[in-house]
Structure formats: C-alpha cells, structure tokens
Image: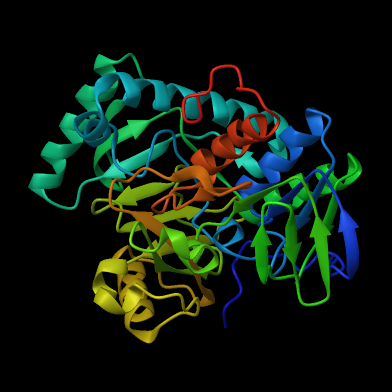
Length: 367
C-alpha cells in the first residue's frame, strides 16, 4: 500500500517521450514547482516541454500533507533570526501573495481556512508566543489559540489543499496552452542544450530541473548541500470529529488535516524513524507507521486506516531552498525542507522570468 489519499484514480496517463523533440526550455519534474514554472513560461510566450520520471505529481508534490503555509519551513521568528528581519518579511509577504495567486489558478483544490500550530510541551508553547510576537511585529496575521486541539497559535492566512488535484489541474492548463508533457520519462543525461531519456531526447536552449526529493541524485553537484528524507502519512475512513483547520504539532513533526468528506490525513513522526528516514526509499516503513497509528489513536480516532504512503523530500542545512544555475544552461529549484507547496510554486514562477531573461515583478529569490 503506497497510494496517497489524494488519488481518485481519474487521471488519464500521458505518453512517454519517444524520438527527438525540440523546445526552447525543457522542464524536468512535473510537480507543483515545475508546472508553475511551465505556466509562467507559457504566459511569457516560450515553447516548453515537460518531463517526469513518473507521473504528474507522482512525487512529494502529490503525496504531501496538503498544507498551504506562508513563509519557509522554519517558523517565522526562526527565519528572522537566521536570515534577518528584512529578508524574512519580504519572503513571508511574497508567499502570502503566492497563496492568493494559487487560489485564482486552482480554486477547487484550495481551502483558505487558516492553520494551527499546537504546542506539545510548555517549552513549545513559549516558542509559539515568540512566533506570534514576531508575526504581529511585522504586521502579519496571527492569533493565540486554545481549543480542542490544544494551545498554540492560529494563522488565518494559511490553508489546506488537495496537492495532487492542484498539480493535475495545472498540467491540464499547461497542455491547453500548448505545452508538451511526458510521463514515465526519466532524464538520463542533462545538459544545457539536451536532455536524454530512455526512448528519446529533447533539444533545447535551457533546462530547468524542478525536483525536490532525490535532487542530489539527479544533480550530483548538489551533494553535501542537499539531503533527501522520507516523509510518511496515513489516512482514515470518515470520522464525525471535526478539525476545521490543518494542524501542525510538536515542532512540525506531527501534522494532520480533515478532508471535506471527513477523512483524516495524518503524517509525521520522521524523528521517530531516526537515521533510517534519511533515505531515497519512498515506501512506508513499519516503524514510523506504527507511531503514526499510535498518534491517531491518541487523538481518539478509532476508524479504519484506508491509506498509507510515503514520499521523498529534500532538506538543506540553512532551510533555504536551492534556486541556481548548477551547470551551464541548467537551472535547479528544490529542497524545500518539507514545506514546498507555496515556496516551490513561487520559485517556479520567479525562475521562469530568469530563464526568459528578466525578473518577475516583486521577486524576492532570484533578483
């Protein structure tokens, strides 16, 4: 069992790449960041081909927890401490604007219901207070929270989404605008003017590698800066208990949301898996799944578990994603440290402008 709860089985598979094709830009990776880049390139009038080793959003882009969070993976006050207040504020504002952009692109996939950060200890509750104060000091929305989930803070501007539905909608939009997309076409050779797959190749002017997990495998130049980990989840049959907002708990190591039909999608416990979770293996492990099931029961949820799945994501030591030219003519974005739904889409749009020889208005990453 390794199928995410998001998969309704209604996707019509795309063909694999065969023979020789030409495009101005070849995008490797048909997840949220790659598809966002492709749509922006199409708006800019560029001819684009997109490839994926699996299916559209077959990696972490369609197998994550479905959280729509402003900011970086580290909490806002930590980002201020790590990177300075000015950069932290600009990044957070840019991700807020990206959430609004995503709502206009794929409204059916998004619920802007806010998010909760819930403390699992007195120490974490104190950190929630620092988090709250930092957000408010810079004019961002946040409120102290106490409710059935516990104590912490509420961030009204966040939300939840069906990540696989969103990516599939973006892929259909790209196809409608003239992009050529190919599934099950792993890149075996990546050069600035050529990408080779088992059955074909693309001749192009530039390449964008928009991959999160296993990024350092595809581009060995990034080894040592990027490290892949496994994130695991499970989902249940519908329950009567209501969680109106997605919940982040225990420093983000535990997280869950309730879907509109009542099912619970719950993930985390990566720390319980220890060193074994730093792996490129993307199948559920018994050790972590047992802990996830224990957490589910601690929440008082006794209904059957219907899905278990895993995905590969990449982390950096700084918490900042990769966004750079790695080889001549080959750019890379990825390594979102576990929260790439918003940042990845934003980076995809910004890098599209760079590939087009310009700068996206309001860009904060690629300036």
